[in-house]
Length: 377
Image 1 (spheres, rainbow, N blue to C red):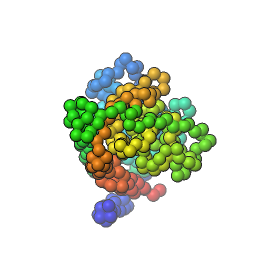
Image 2: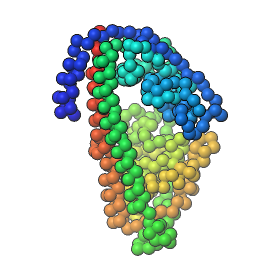
Image 3: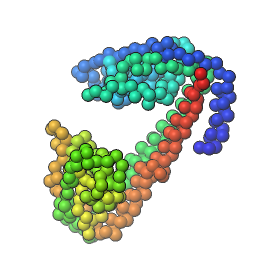
């Protein structure tokens, strides 16, 4: 990163040195247009023109577009304040504002500049039942307008950073799929023993016969802290807060049993508090909790398919108790865990491997983006 900075920073200084810059309001340099809503029956699951409504994930597809490619846009409801850019034609629904630039500004330059203002723009979102962003919250933002040649060079540099990041993310995705393949291969004992009850000291037993499925205890919001030693898990594998004491041991596997994340598998290397939206497991002399975590992770698709979707998604403990799992000797469990831990570190750890490289690349990109667009008035 330092070597890159030694090379890029002098170039940036030369690029920006003496550049004549005008400051104009957004609606002076681009026409702000609002999209048009489509009803569900007009959408299809596949098609040429993606339909954007209230998130960066297409709501569906339509047989025509209403916005040309090379266009910057802002979401005004739902994921309000998110800023997007499309190289291809698409359909903007009525929760999308998009910008038709004048001859004084490039659309991609506008996109990169608005990203530097995203925190301030999101700060203008009204937090009602559906988060909303009004047009006047961004239409008067002051934008620096350097010569088109300077805008073009800024876009070229930032495009290079985003391309490098995309390549790393594609490699990470490939590594994750490779990890899942080897994980599933290592854990497919039922295939090795032909589906019998035991072979070569590997037993196939219902999980409920090996350990107890334990449901946690709910805490009220006023009992939670923003910081603390013992994270509280409920409805997700990210803590909802912290508590003054734990109710589960360190090195424990867990399954979320309620909400949108029902069926998701988690693991904590530290003591924690399990709420009633989280199943844990009693520790057993014959079953490593880390091995159980990887085993359940390989079955996550099957487990999620058992979630009751009516009302609030819910997973029944009896479903978990009946899952048949292979129990190899502890020495074999330890060997498998050692292999998968290495894969897990390379694919998921923010301190090692590709995730670390991607995090550094994003930090570097944000640094140069802010530097390139930090014109003095």
